[in-house]
Amino acid sequence: MPLLTIENLPGAVLEVSTGSTLLAALHGAGFDWMHACGGRGRCTTCRVQVRAGAECLAPLTAAENRYRAAGRLHPDERLACQARLPAGAVRGRVPEATQLPHQRYDG
Picture (cartoon, helix red, strand yellow):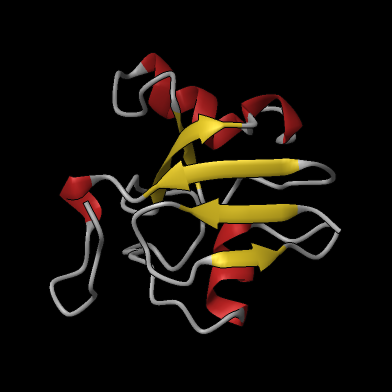
């Protein structure tokens, strides 16, 4: 099963169900993750900085392409509500700008 690891979120090493978004996998495992638009690809608050395994993610969605073109989604970032991990392993981080105040982060 595909594996997602969030380096700066303690305990966030989880299996991602086929067809599931990274956001759904994180929420399903009990992790709180910012998503101001409710996970509909209408903002960039759920972005994840991809540190390794970007090639394992499904292609960018229309929403992600739109935010990339507007300069609001960096080349090493994906929207957790849009990105799917069909196979392989991805390692990422929660960007400092979207960290939740009540959540503990490492480094």
